Length: 194
Image (cartoon, rainbow, N blue to C red; front, side):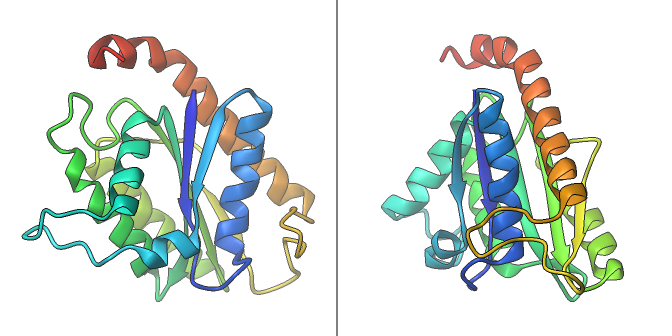
């Protein structure tokens, strides 16, 4: 089972990138293969332009990896109550999956993680991200994780979560993705012939 993480900012060790990495470690502990497309990668992607079908090697790798994914974790900061441009640009690129046998996020659980310096932005951004996942035919996990970064630091510089409730929520989100993936992988494999 492959679980793909998408998320981060241009800032090294951003809380959204570390939250996605924490959830991916929890998925790996359950036996999943994982891959994380973090902030540095996302910042390197050209702006999505549907009228220009040429793709860089990085874009092709990203789209192909998501195509093979059995579960997805998306982490975004809440910028002015919405998804960051870096994350949205990556999601827009996944329009390249529209003609697939399993288009977009179909038959895949998608964990939504939002970080923001305040609960209002956390809530509105989570609603927005879940709406995008629905539009892309994905199944948002029952648990969406919102992290208010306006108080005590939640992550150590080495990337590990220092807050037990946060770690537990991210682990629960990962469990929901792996459980859903385990139930749908045989169906998806039959559909795609992989």
